[in-house]
Length: 158
Length: 118
Image (spheres, rainbow over the protein chains, first blue to last red):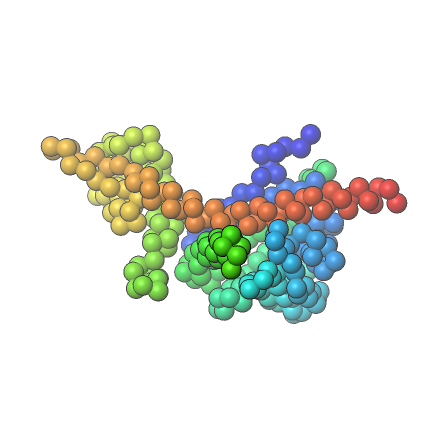
């Protein structure tokens, strides 16, 4: 059976500039790598409930650009960047900028570590400054607040 | 230092900076088990009193620790409200990724099952 503790997401700030997430999946590394690099797969898991993916561009080569946009009525959330390193199926590095908060964004390194029937995904987000790192954590809150407003709009028929 | 739009020092930055240090995290963990004096905090950490006081100041500035007055004693306490703020802020970020990863997990299962039927 799967170890449920391992398959839970861990989210840890490391030092001042990094955020590290880990999550295990019951799949080979090569398939998990595809999930992040093939639009037909990304579209299936990236948009959270209530949103649709309106843009999913992936120019899969070092120096190639990517852009993912999810939307719901009245709101659009876009992320974009450039691939820095592609070493399938073990490692992928790309820059990521949240379009709602233009700036240097972060350098995202994904590591796919296959262990038996599972693959441990580690996402390391390295920011230019501590303020950028903290803003990223907070951006989740702002999106959450907007979601709350959207729900209120539905309730009052707005 | 980061300022929020209202010009206040960004409190999340202060809190994360305060908690980024292992000694300060040890202090918070100890206080989570109950209030303690600076002396009692210094002993297990094998630190000088001024050393501990310096760390306590950072925790106090972030609003995580408050120091009371009880006669001659000045016990330190955690401010649970503040810790709750931190978990609320990071919770949104975490929940968003948790939702994505749960969907990814489910989709992977479907893809693998379909592959086996081929």
